[in-house]
Every structure is written in C-alpha cells, then in structure tokens.
Length: 229
Image (cartoon, rainbow, N blue to C red; front, top):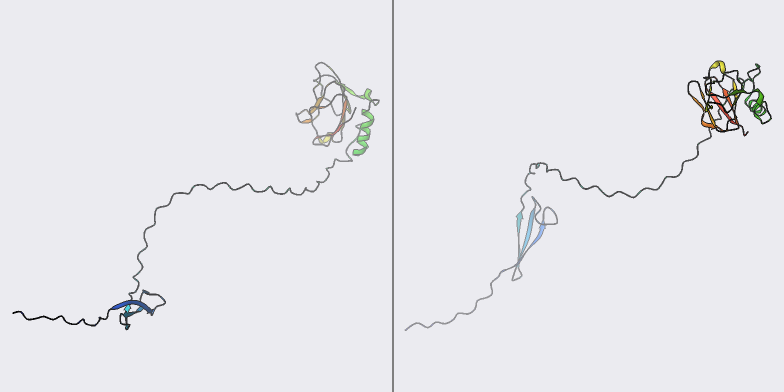
C-alpha cells in the first residue's frame, strides 16, 4: 500500500528587484561620463534599497585625421540682384576761365598801330556792311587763287571754276596780327582752310552774303564769327 501524501503550505513571497536607477556621478550631472564613477540605486519589491557603483572607462585616444574628401561640385550661379537706384546728378563744375587773344598784336595791315579785340570787331562792322568798303575787296573768283597777307579785305564771287574753299596762308609769327575780312558774295556757302589743309571754317560754314573776320595769332587762324550781311 502506497504511503499517503499531503500538500505543503504556500511559502512567503520572495523579494525581487523592482527597479535600478542612476543616482549620481563623480563627473557631473549625467551618467556615463568618461573616467567618472556612477552610483546606481537598486529598489527591491519589499521596499528595501541598496547601491552599487560603476567606474566608467576613459575616452580613447583621438584617431588620425582622415584624408580630405573630394571637392564638391560648383553650385549654380545665383540670380541677378535688383538694379540699384540711379545716383544723384553731380554738382555743376565751376566755369572755366575766359580764354584770351592778344589785344596788342592785331593791326589793320597798313599801320603799326595795334587794335584790341573790341576795336577789331567795330572795324569789321564798318568794312563789311552793305554800304561799306566793298570796292576795296580783293575779288577771288576761281579755285586757283590763294590769298596773301596783303589782302586784308577779300571778296569771293561766282567764277569758273567756282570757289568752294578759300585758301589762306599757313599761320606764322610773321603773319601774327594779320586780319582777313572774307566776304562771300556767292549764292552758296564756302569753307576756309590753310595751304597745309588745316580747316579754319569747315565745309560751307561761311554762308552766302556773310563776312567772316579771321585773325592770325601766330600759330593758327582765329574765326571771330560771321556778320549778318
């Protein structure tokens, strides 16, 4: 006959681990700091606690620098920026000094008495007027004629072949002070140039029935302008 068996009584509940939490560090306010010691707290299911420490390892030596990477592609050109505002207009520059022509070197080619520029203009008004001394003009009618320093008054008329450009002597120190009054009695305008081809009155700038006053200053012929008739 087999022996009788009887169930034993249930034992008391065992004590387990409820949680493990980081408590502190000798290196700062967070766990895992290299070289520091961390303290952890173990809480058991029965409410009891205990602690243990963990020594963190130090950081390893810095590794060698890696080789430089390949150069990246050039980025695309950015959009053109807006056009800037137009700058303000600069201030007007100062008026230049008035140029001068000698007032002591102009004569009437018949005397040694000098005339200033005002007197020369007044003299020109007399000899170039419609009732002035036209009979004293040296008449130029063809292209083959070149005036000389003695032709103070010059009248250009219609001829064959007609004069389109009057030729005056090249300016020299010997002609300094010489005044030419050139009357254009042609029906069309004429020009004036030197023997060397330097323009004094360009193209057909001296109109029909106009008189120009030309003064030699020793290096060039100065055109004082044309009269109204």
